[in-house]
Length: 136
Ligand SMILES: [Zn+2]
Image 1: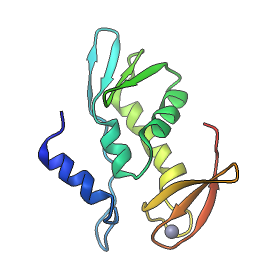
Image 2: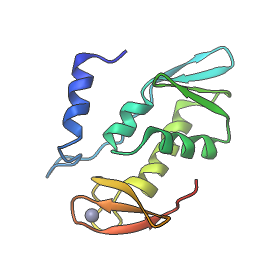
Image 3: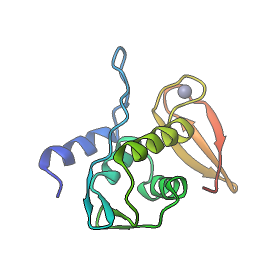
Image 4: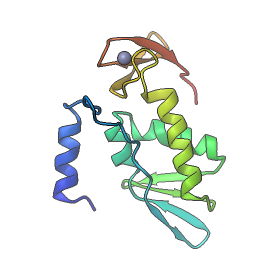
């Protein structure tokens, strides 16, 4: 369940830049627990919202990279295989490198846009547009 503070943060993050002068951009860490033979991740939508990326886009990337089936329901991700949080965090870092950080200015304030069948990363800080892979 989301706390009032989390909801407030999410609302803020839609308008304010992720990075500020002198403030280091930190990639949020995944949170979750083991349930039997599965892994339950509880904060993927929060991370995706912080990074301004659709949660299902990020999840698709993670499932592919981790080579595990998974489900996404009611903000909760269930992975069908035990994977260390360290491994998941590494993949989130790769996702950030590929789909979040601007290749021009290095800022994380980007959005993914689709145009004529192509997928682009658009930087809100410097205006740069880079094509990214459309298919994960
Ligand atoms: Zn930029």
